Length: 198
Ligand SMILES: Nc1ncnc2c1ncn2[C@@H]1O[C@H](COP(=O)(O)OS(=O)(=O)O)[C@@H](OP(=O)(O)O)[C@H]1O
Ligand SMILES: Nc1ncnc2c1ncn2[C@@H]1O[C@H](COP(=O)(O)OP(=O)(O)O)[C@@H](O)[C@H]1O
Image (tube, rainbow, N blue to C red; front, side, top):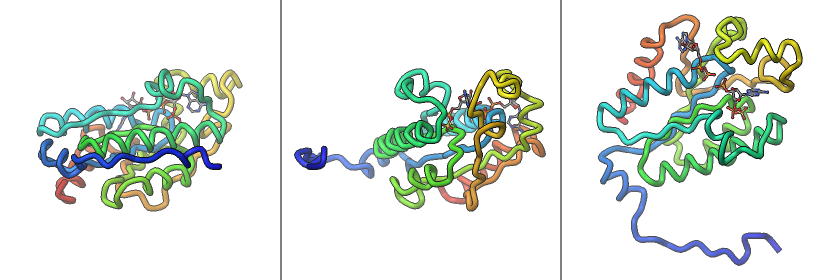
C-alpha cells in the first residue's frame, strides 16, 4: 500500500491565478546554480532588491539558511543533496502557487535534480541561471574559507574539489561573474525578465 493511498487533496477555491492577480505580476522561480563562491547569493540579493523596488513580491531561498532549518538533517552526499533540492523544489512550487517570485540559490550540482525541480512547475515558471565562474576564481575569492579547508581535507565532498559539479546544458541565462561586474550580471538578469515580459 502506498503511503499516499488514503490522502485526498481538497480543492480550494482560490487559485494561483487569483493570487497572481492580487500581486499584480506572474510568479516564477529564478534558480541560481553554480560553485560555492561563484556569486549566487550576491547576485540574487541585488536582483531581489531591484524587483522589490519595482513592486514585485519576492523571497530568497538560500542554501546556507535552509540547511540551518528545514534541511538541518542533510549533509553533502549525493543522496542528501538530491533530497535537499527535492525539498527546495517543493517549497519553491508552494511559493509560485502563492503568487511570489522565488530566488533559489543552491549549488544544485546534479543536472537531474535541477530538471526534477523544473518539471514541478509550468515551463515558463522555471528560469535556470548558471552563475558561471572558473573554480580558480571561486577559490581565489573563498569568501568563507571553505576551499582552503576542502584542500586540506577538513571538509569532504566539497563541490569542485572532491565532489562533482555538472554544468547546465541549456540554462535560460548564463552570467559570467569573473568576466563581468556584479552590476552587469544583475542587469543581464533584469533585461531577460523585461524581454520575457515578466
Ligand atoms: N561539502 C560541501 N560542498 C559544498 N558546499 C558546502 C559543503 N560543506 C558546506 N558547504 C556550504 O553549504 C552551502 C551549499 O549548500 P547547498 O544547499 O547550496 O548545496 S547543494 O545544492 O545541496 O549541493 C555552500 O554555500 P555557498 O558557498 O553559498 O554555495 C557552503 O557554504
Ligand atoms: N561579478 C560578480 N558577481 C558576483 N559576485 C562577485 C562578482 N565579482 C566579485 N564577486 C564576489 O564574489 C563573492 C561571491 O560570494 P557569494 O555571493 O557568497 O557566492 P555563492 O553564494 O555562490 O557561494 C562575493 O564576495 C562577491 O563580492
